[in-house]
Image (cartoon, rainbow, N blue to C red):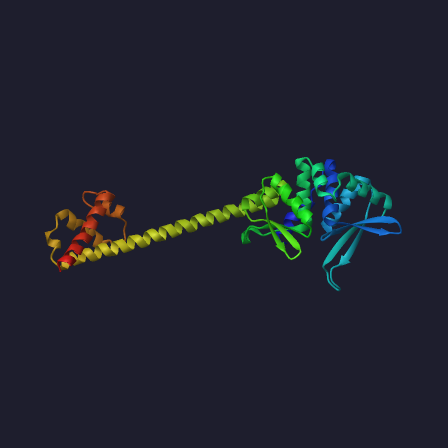
Length: 308
């Protein structure tokens, strides 16, 4: 099961809040509902892609009106096991009550609808249903991306506006006649999951972020260590080369006892650090003194080059 499906399943397993049933129903109607008129009576249809989603809208209608809608199962393709579901309110009286509720909230007039949606809870429910019905989220191991795909400019404006109310600055991408409202910032995706109540998915996302952060830190440290090792080896090679040149050209014999001792240590231990080299000297030397003396070998060798 994909991360996106697990996230939706987590949300759908929760019971709708009784005090927010109206907004749950309206949001579902807004994003996935349709009206069928036949013989001067109404039927309201709610599309669902999964059985658990169909049961969710069924529970909302049952809780609101004490009415059991029909559930129709459809094969998405002939001879295919993939199915979709339609929850149907066949009772014209109940259908009229749902439409009265929609008229009261004026869900088909966006500006008026937004004025009716005042509380943070109501806004969260609309974002939750938009994600459940139109959204998807990447497996965080493969990258951070949450998007809600919409076909209507009013829906885009509604989602963008509600996200901004929670300080989430989503981006919008137009694809032919469709729109994608998306978030790629992992912090904001975490915020969105918290808003819609996907707490387990949020926890899983944060775990992945921590693992990725640790891996990145380790890689950075390894790269840093490798660069340091490369620099140390290169510097040591130059130092040993300079010392050997001084020996070949008889300049080494004229150096002080302390310089000769350090030179011999460097030739014998070409890959140890300056700090370790200083500890081996007798008496021990600071890093600064060791570095100064090693640089002196290089300068003497370069000076000898110039004399030639």
